[in-house]
Amino acid sequence: MKIRTRKIGAILIGVAILIVVGYSIFKIISGREVGFQEVIVIGTLLMMFFSALTWGTKEQKDGILQEEELGQRIIEKSSKISYFILLFFILAAVAADQFINHTVNIFLLAVLGLAIILLPFVEFVVAKKYQ
Amino acid sequence: MRNKIKQYREKKGISQGGLADLCGVSRQTINAIENNKYDPSLQLAFDLAKTLGVKVDTLFLNEEEI
Image (cartoon, rainbow over the protein chains, first blue to last red):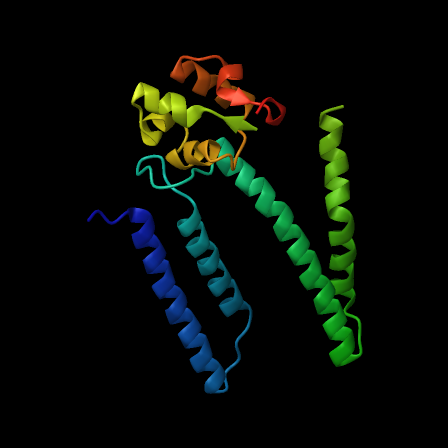
């Protein structure tokens, strides 16, 4: 059976994720600080993992290509869904901060405000191109 | 929008992968179009029609025409 490069890549990244997550859990248990570095590394690996699962390559013909029109449609649709999910999470983070710490993080609030106006503003700019 | 791609493709004896190669897209795109999960762009619709040797309005049907 022919094992595709994409699958091998996804398996390797999956193993890397398990190692990093395992090491982070070990750090938490041993009382060491887990922070920016772990979040960035795990986030990047997860991004690569899902990307490897989703997209095919032209040479291997093993899935939808990012550059073809269906790929572009998928990117557009998922970008908008992601935006609303992210907006919800920022709103939840502001609410959680207020509920738990009884404070409002000004930077988080600024990001929430920016996130709310970002989509209509970008739509306005893009719409100008077609008028 | 409905289409008759599968019907014309099979009549020509081309596989989904073969048609995809001829039109410069992935097999998954052809599969999504055939199963009415995705409406192709005008350019791809013309490419498909040309490859299958039919007119675009023969290959694609408006919902009202069904």
